[in-house]
Amino acid sequence: MNIFLILKLIHVLLFAFWLGTDMGTYYSSKFVVNPKLTPGQRTTALNILLGCDLGPRIAMPLVMPTGLHMAALMGIANISDLGLVIIWALSILWLVLVLALHFSKNEVQKKKLKNFDFWIRPVLVVFIGGFAIYNLSNPVYLEAPFLNYKLLVLCGLILCGLGIRKQLAKFTPAFVDLVTGNEKPDTNDIMKKRMNNCLPYVYGIWAGTIACAALGLHLIG
Image 1 (cartoon, one colour):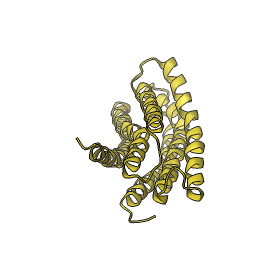
Image 2 (cartoon, rainbow, N blue to C red):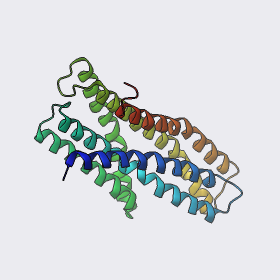
Image 3 (cartoon, helix red, strand yellow):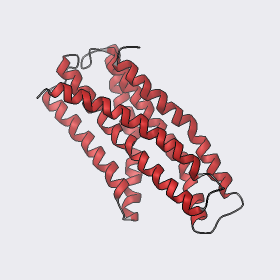
């Protein structure tokens, strides 16, 4: 069994899964903020949106370990077996956190997990971004520059996700008002504004995932 080819397949599928389901999330959002639909219909659209959004959330923790593992097998990344084990372990823990956050029915636990998941991401951006910038000037661990560029783009994708969360923090209370019958005169305006404010980050994620694919295919970088 060729481990490299399996990793390559997974890496490619993660890209397709990430970009494809993110577009599904974007399309579903149009129905969530459509005032012509009933609250029930909009709730169904939101559930579809959340289901689609699980795609990028699964892909994000796994793209880095699969990519770095391939690079190590190719001999362009000087990462020891222990280093790969640590990278995979941390990535799987992140994935477990994402899945627990999505499927948990305990609202108290969910809030704690959500806060932890939110604040761990800036830490990852600093660590991953610092690692990539260091290697660009001192290629000790990653000999191929395109690997560092991909890591920096990944940091950008994480930040875009945080930007979306910040906007949706004010969207959620407005949506709750809608479905509980406590709709206010500006409820729909708030929801639409917050969704529209997410668009630059959404477009940034699409551009970033495509840029990562172009770097991986050596079209750029």
